[in-house]
Image (cartoon, rainbow, N blue to C red; front, side):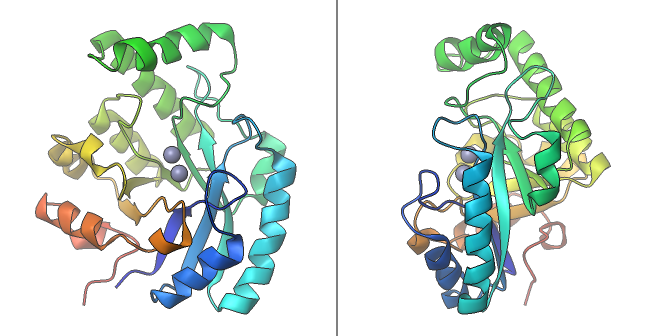
Length: 239
Ligand SMILES: [Zn+2]
Ligand SMILES: [Zn+2]
């Protein structure tokens, strides 16, 4: 059984449902907890003010839906130095912080634009060079070291990294590696590295509609079949 789904979107970003609808869906599939993780604040249309509004809805939704609703953020990596698009003073308000790379976040500066974005847009589609992978890896490891992250989102999606190094850094800091039901194919060939890293994992749906909340059974089966032990998946309790 699953305890929770910690990566879901609502209409506050690019999801289709409300906070309450996601919470009700979580209850309907037997979860005890859900995190609302709309996008970080350098995605156009997103802001900390919107997050606070979502957070108030989380408090109301948990009363109505009977599940715990965490007010989270899916923050964006926006520089080679590991900057995320959440400010230090905003962090205490965030109840679940997951971070990953997204093309549509505005980078911190132009240099980052060329360093990181050129790779994913032009080079990444064909091949990602060794240098780019090293740089991406360093950036993500720095984010893991600098921020109070709960989890790292969809490794290797849109930005190739050295999965072993990132997962090892995550393990050291007690940060979870997300196994994202929508992007598991990006981990093809990396399962042994994930296992060897010593990291723990969290399964998530990355639901963009209430219907997809908690739909993580397929991802669980895939992870188990690739040799990830059930006891290292923190939101799964074996029967
Ligand atoms: Zn994402
Ligand atoms: Zn997401």
